[in-house]
Image (cartoon, rainbow, N blue to C red):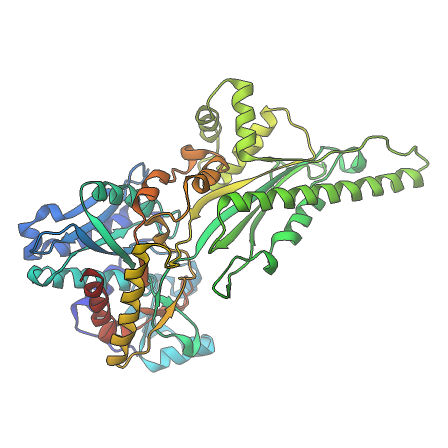
Length: 545
């Protein structure tokens, strides 16, 4: 049985976890924001300085969700500000099965769990009484609650502060990060108004398995991009197979070339990160018929530590062209054999492969129609079913534009689907990289003084909203994404200009958890309640000196 705690942080955690803020959800995500806002507003500092506590709208959000931004200013005026960040949303709870109704009541859920029905590691943790199970206890309402508590504590003695300290809590991280994309615009605005952000500390938890579940501070955050390749062949009845060109073999070759290919994994500092992972292979035809597969799309997830969109788009082009050419060669060889065995003349036609980028296709569409890309895209998106998400809409934009251009296969179109999480790497190249590195080293020493072993790692290996605290590439890198994302800003409004202005140094330091997004998501309470608050305070004060 879990050991309950009377601390304000624990009580706040139980209350905030109790709000089922599954993203996207206007009402529940805003409930969390309002609850945090109301708690912070009770502090005397914020009664005296109400403008330092704000509920900020997420620009362009159809669900009208809000961001919590609160700042405690040092008594001695300064523009230097240390920022703590977290997200208020969680993922769905269908995996909880018959205990789904208790997913947001962590104490009851933990008590109801049967260790005999859990895996070995989860069962061991449950029996220990040291772990609290439930949706959002680790990812990431625990960090949000500790950050809130720390801000409220610091507000009581502003004369001790060497810099301002702020919190930023956003919705939608588990979906498309609309909250942090919107927050980037606010941060750029605050920076223009005079704030200087020394560092942003994300309070995402450390997730590990077994005995490796130890606290970790991360110097950067892994990136993620979603490449796709759309393939168009030539229609034919299945009974007249060789009169057309099926894209089935082409898509298969693309999958074999990219999916799980370690040779293409991004690498940094001796670390090899996960390879291309296929997310979907989709038949892009609207209805069933006895027609060969004439159009299909394959979408991937790709984690980055060094590679930018321009380099990735070239890889996609090369992969698509080779897959098409190899498929054409095989197709024509088989076609010749088929015709020969049926006493027919050898085929005369030679198919030619073409590969386009999204940017090239949209440029052709502009020239042909005399309309802007925005107009073309808006019209197509308006015709998409409401159930379609941004990725489905993006693929339909390409399919429709290719048809409108009258292009004929075999061809491929390569590009990206939303969202994009640019990697953030601390390589000690920039002057601002030094502060978070020094603070991390100091935190390791402080942890040892407190009897805690703290690991320092180069990258937080789950994507995070730290991606939107700045951009380490240049404008051409961002442009390569924007130009090759079907739908452009109409579909996914990536804040390029704001990110280029920000460049906030980052760290990630959160509680210790396990099994994110699973029914056994859990939080290690002894570290969370005893050590983490003191260590987080030490980190924030070190950064602000």
